[in-house]
Image 1 (cartoon, rainbow, N blue to C red):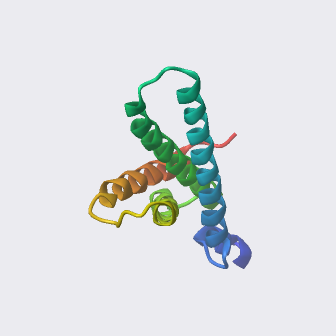
Image 2 (spheres, helix red, strand yellow):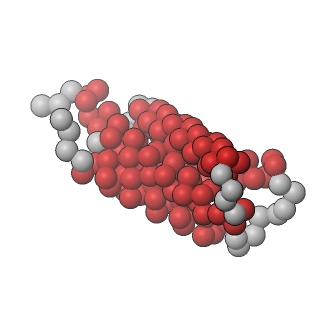
Image 3 (cartoon, one colour):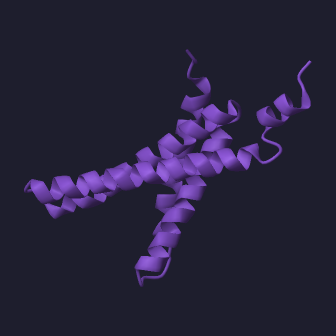
Length: 135
């Protein structure tokens, strides 16, 4: 029979879920920022066209959300698609907040594809995290 603490950590009660989502979203954001810095360094060192910046930014967002969903579902060890989606949504809110602080442009329908992309990549990372076998 499982103890109350074991069941709480398994089901996400008692704040463990919030800590897992916050920690994994933070690591996903750090990975995304690090990749953006590496891509900026690559563009400044090499003679690459400026049109490649958009796809590099999208790639860093996707990998950051994928990593956050993977990490959160590994911590929770259940409901990977749900927890990955939560992490993707939190990272999307980070991006929207940063865009709101830095850019003067308003928010329109253009944020919808970004949300779908980040939500989907977080969910895929969550599925990988739950289904990956441990050592």
